[in-house]
Length: 117
Image 1 (spheres, rainbow, N blue to C red):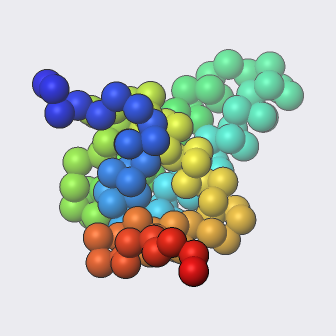
Image 2 (cartoon, one colour):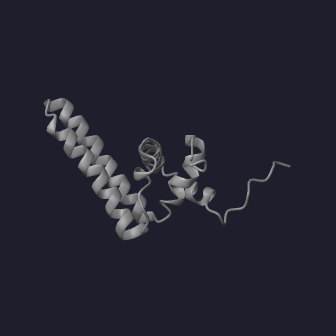
């Protein structure tokens, strides 16, 4: 188990590589947005069962996208906490319109950063 990722900074490029297809990221975005909305509604209405619905919503869209689109195993099973952080990191970048650039930046075919002249 010495090859296990121990820091989020090292995990992020792996997470991005596991979400290389745009529709995978879109499905995650829908699930995470739905989960956040359900958590807010649960708080406003004082309805704790909606918290379970929030979990189901987020994981349903994510896992379906990995099964049908990306065709890989969700990182949640190996790195549950890093995966959750990665999902919100990706969600925030998608809200900002910056996730596609992040995928390009971290793709194996991307040129390494060159020092400024």
